[in-house]
Image (cartoon, rainbow over all chains, first blue to last red; front, top):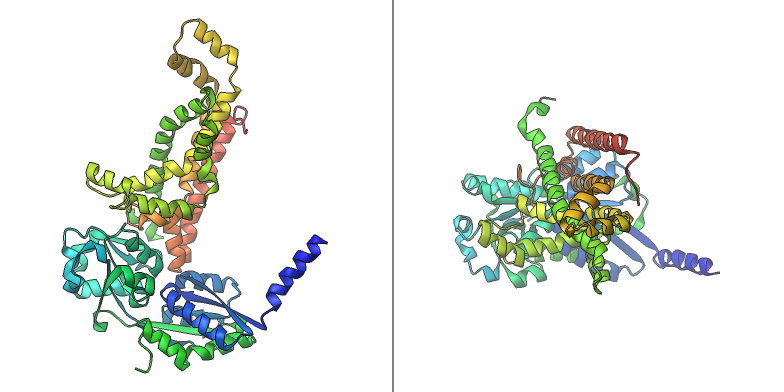
Length: 251
Length: 228
């Protein structure tokens, strides 16, 4: 009897919604996509999106090993194109936004972020957190910007790397690192904005962070996934992207 | 395969075993007194101490890692102390990994030794006391030699557990070459970077090493080791 009740409860929770789309998205999207999810679900009360955030490389590996995701939003176009080559996508890879990066520091460090990169040479800055440049697109861009401005060699010994941008932010937020190079999409979130200051790097300091997505084979017959795909290019979604500092492809 | 020849390739392994070796040595030094105290003293708050020692068994590495990060940072109470003493903070430093591993692997060292102490014949201990031996001499000359298998089990498991540790190191290490980039982290990075070939090589080496180490120990001491 009890088992039967539990079982029917389990079945019920998944059938309350007409459609469920499973999405895997890059860590820099965590705030923007959480907001999009709530707007989308308000507009489509019968649909539900489940979003897993993490590094794009990890999601890529999971997908080629059969992870049941319907949509893949990567921080780099490269991964989406590789998935297409391997035959895991149902649509052509498309660009949805360009990422921007800059320095982020806690307010209570009392250092003037507007000094720009020269702040990195301050003796009070002992650890600089960036995302891992071996695989995270935002880490690659961070190193490019440092090299471009001839700071890389001077600060190399101070660099610590986070597994993805969220962890990089966490290193700075916890005080373990003194400053970080973060996507503006995280720095402009409510939580981080309140406690830290941001200095945006001009876009020409690094190669463009081209963020791409595709509908995956697993989601090709999923109406919710298609609805969400359309939603991402809607006016509401564009406003959210703008709010979190993403540049859009046709601007 | 040229990669195999380069120093950088082997560095994560060297670092891993250095970390496991140092952590295990420290764990012997603190694990034996803790286990001794837990078995032979009669204080009321013993269950409380036992709980503390066992907590790392239950807590997910993400919880431990997060609080280590806070405590080990320059503003954290341990990090601040370390900074004043040694001029560097604990987070993103090898010392931090050692301290984290010691705490994380503590129950793996203490539990086997604790069970060893419990199994020692009480009359043997009392006989040593009546012969005028001090508590310390009794411990070193009577008790410890008779629980050799437990000591080895504790050491091997604590060592192996440190080699296999990932979550805590990921959270407090910061992935620095030659400092905090241990084998498990290097393997994770290679997966993330989609270098599956390097990844397979790393994993195979770690697998082979762990297997051979455990196998030799179990073969040599198979009859002596107790599993409780």
